[in-house]
Image 1 (cartoon, rainbow, N blue to C red):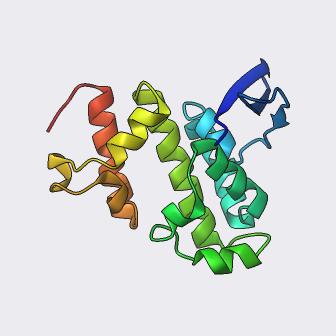
Image 2 (image 1 turned 180 degrees about the vertical axis):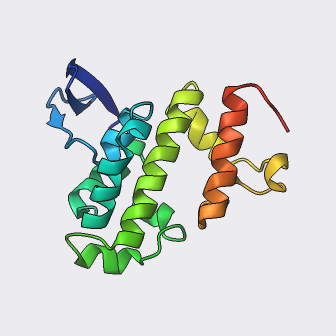
Length: 163
């Protein structure tokens, strides 16, 4: 699978390119992948993100996010409020599905910012955590409360506050 890298040619433009290809893809501002790449800016643009959630995430933006984080749709089947088969039939997703996609984007952006590599973060998500009752952080992402708990653990790691 091609790994993607974020390239900032001009401050206001963000694009991604695969390591094998130098073809740059311009990211739509405030898309889920934009949130992953700009996790530190995301809190300042929450009203824009809310507007995007209400309008619904486009299927192409979801596919780009999945590709960017190096996952498959199947991995997120238990996390998303819609089935993968129903998502494949739609061009734009519901507000609930869109909100979960943006939650995932924010979480992955934070994880990539805190952990050394994408692989380290994915490994952490798949490793049982004592602070989460010996559950894998990824398994907690099927609810908003689980998202908060996982995000809190990432923030504790960021600030070296272990529980």
